[in-house]
Length: 274
Length: 347
Image 1 (spheres, rainbow over the protein chains, first blue to last red):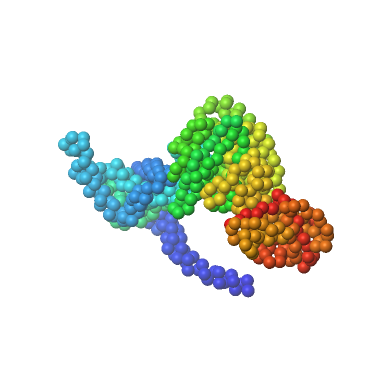
Image 2 (image 1 turned 90 degrees about the vertical axis):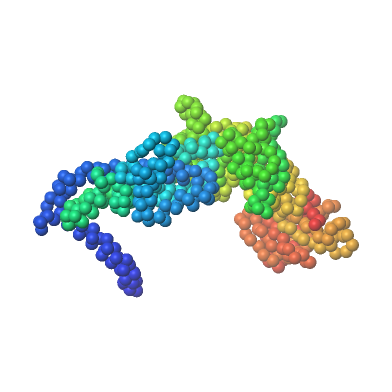
């Protein structure tokens, strides 16, 4: 009976396991393997070339992504704090809208909005009473703006969910002892929702560092982010080796973050259990 | 005596439901006012409105003669003890207790001194560096209490403080809590659904039902002179007998013939103060005492006594009376309740 149960259990998970193995594990291992192959031989040449040509882009990717995460967290926490204390249905619906707009459309819309004679500049030239302003659509400012615009609703959704799930008595206890709402956010809500904020930060980081569409639509021509470099290596040079090496580097960046997150979670649990 | 907390005509409705219906209570000096009532009676709404967490439809709340009705919770200087303790898990015991003082911007030394005083007062100094998850329920309760008293509030609000503790600890902490409140001399409003807890701990009791305060008095007053059927039934362990008017304006309940105005009479009999005797035993009853005859139809062993289920001829309700004597099921008994231990209400 027990053997039969085991077989049934195995058969039940087999489709999911096969899909994971075929569509995720195999390509991942193959990409890692190919990143170490140059002219049919095992070597680090692809990595040497990747760092030689793209080290500035790798740094740029990390910086832009980290700054995006910073802005996204600040905005999401502000939004979530506001909505935790005050019911405002309109804002509650509006902040989620970007979730339903494809990246391609966002990129296009932002190109129009941030162009040299786009919506933003038309407005700014009138307010500042100047003739002309440079466009932001092909600069790091435009890119950052767009990333923050796209990523904030995801992070806010996670963070607001955590804020709302927090038992009201923890907040009321602080108010009862004289704390203002701002004080409560920093001393009670954020520390108690730290794990969810970490999840939001990591997801934002991963989604930003791996995005391509927005960069192609609105990003500066140089420096560029890793994903665009990968695309170039494949499209123009058919250089899968360096492209894979760049892919592995971005994996490693994310893994560093994942390890940090897991250690943080373990410490949190350890701290609570004592 | 100075009135520290006073509520004047408090009203609050949630849709059609009146959570507070013209509620007037007050606490003098260091009194402990227990607010009791069944679930949904409005007692927690009353407590939360005093803390500032419920926006009232009308009425006034005065603390030390100052109108605080429209003040936000953080400006009222009342300390609330939450049913689930609401200790912040990321802070140590010391940090939890110090929170209110830090908010009030006391200097470090004063904070340390006062927190240590509160921890000593509640005998939990040794737990100062622990996190709440490392404490037992009883210890968490003390920390929550320390956090509330350390800010020296004008009024202390306790929301079912003992409900999360097991029965044995609850009994012990009842005494401790009462002694503590007397030593601290902080006016206290204590919400509970446990009437025994309220009777044992309170200086005064307010009984709420459907958003209204039905009676306010000392524990003895509400126990001995309940003003209506609900209170008589709610306080103490009782059995209620419903009797329909048989003849013209006269009702017969056991040996008593009562002149009445209305059709139905309810007799509330205090189960713990009623005797169950063998039917043949001679027993002199005084005028006004109640004597009923019935048959035991069930019994429960409660340790020091039995709880008997007794059927009275001609009465639908079954009586539940406690007695140390041993009787068998189907045995005929007489039930004697002295004047003052049963109450009669017409409805």
